[in-house]
Length: 560
Image (cartoon, rainbow, N blue to C red; front, side, top):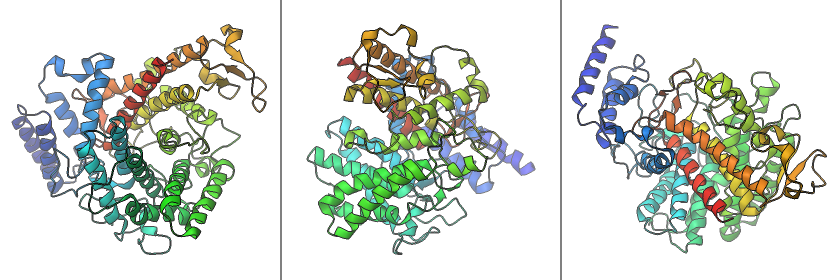
């Protein structure tokens, strides 16, 4: 205890010595040095969340520099830039804050936090999702003046060539099942993590393949070439990096593995549906470069079998509940309800509508079970998290802070009570924006039936819809369905109300970032202050994605 107090006093003294210059890069470098020092001296268990909160409270700044005090539209503009910079600052070779000697070029660390908790690793999942945001950024800029971001993406791809071939506790690259590709995380310097962990995690290879394939698709779309000398060409990338990941899915999709939250060994919706998307994307490039006709046939068979499993055999759709069941074994065992933000994320990460037609992959953003998943999570967490209690009682739909799943007990440091996550809350917003965009882009009618009526009644008065705004119910739908015709006034009003609903989730995020727009993993369900790993890369990526889809949705609404 004396040692702890001594270290605490030394820590506070050091913090005050940094008080004046704190801000931007010096803030992050200060935290890194503090975490290194404490990490060397103790496990840091007596300082949960203290580092981050101390700096948040002690930074002296002008009111106009407090990003949380600006209006909503200005905040989005500023926070998008901060989030993008937050992503880059957690990537080796481009970061302004990381020691490059500690982080391999192209390695994406989950967070610079090294103690309580230690997230100073590169997770295959987090890295793939983060780099996908950079791919979108290049596309949004018409592949112009983005040489630096192209270099980051290609450094990531090269880095993963080495990670794939690194022996680890999940297995080896060269065995028939390529079992080593199921390893979830590695040290920042590209060495294997050999301690106990929830492994294998079978979503990583598929997510990595999706991201790399989307980048290759972008090269073709904008008639660009690979600039990285090691990677050579799209054909090299396919044969040496993408094909091994596709092989892993072919050989392992039917096996149990740990979920995206790294807790449960079973079959999971998130893993299955992203694997399916990876096979679909992979088939397109394989038809161009694959010389082994048998492997092409294996991909096609895997796609058919995996889709059948998802839709019919897995239990992800259960007649006893109206929403997607993320991990059916837990529902069957009576341990969980099956509600999980992983289901929302699974849909978002498996339907890359800008790089192809994904209508044949189930559970797109307009799927009734998916909409019901979001609706049920909001209904649960409005009451579960005290900071949401001011959202109770509204007749019109309003978003709230969302966590991972109702039964969660991980608090960012250990086990006690689960909290809202930036990832979950931002993804709810992105999902509804994409729902609206999908309707507008495809000129789709809105079908409302007994299965989704409770959700839509928050945004439209069913008793006062003009008859001219309705059309014939599809023959294969429920007999009590109503169909709001695309382009009518009711359709437009519903779309605008849904935009407001999506914005309300972002309003929650605005309330819980710190004064400079930084984001951790979670924010406390009672008082709302951030906790868990600081500057979480996935948080920045998820929020940036939501902003991006908001703008795309507003743009397409303005066209009609």
